[in-house]
Image (spheres, rainbow, N blue to C red):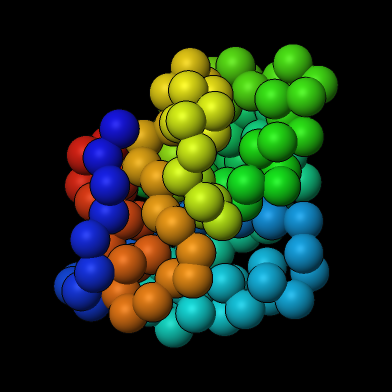
Length: 132
């Protein structure tokens, strides 16, 4: 698992998709808006349990801690790895328990809120570069 550092995003490929799994509608809309401004194809997904959506070539999953906690609680966190894409987990605080569950689920990168500067875009760009 890698920790994301601050900075601003560089160029991205046209087909780069970010799947947003965030429960809070306002946060989800804000993330989608910001990601689309950066040139990403941002799509919402309820819970990352199934397969990748059709037409997605190069993607990463942006997962909020609340959705992840629900997945851990229901025993579905292992399904993250089935998607076959890197996962960026947004957390309120990096606790040992969060780190253990994230590692077991195959989470690629953890970013801590608040998401200041370009830390989120750096994490997504790095995740997508590692998946290519």
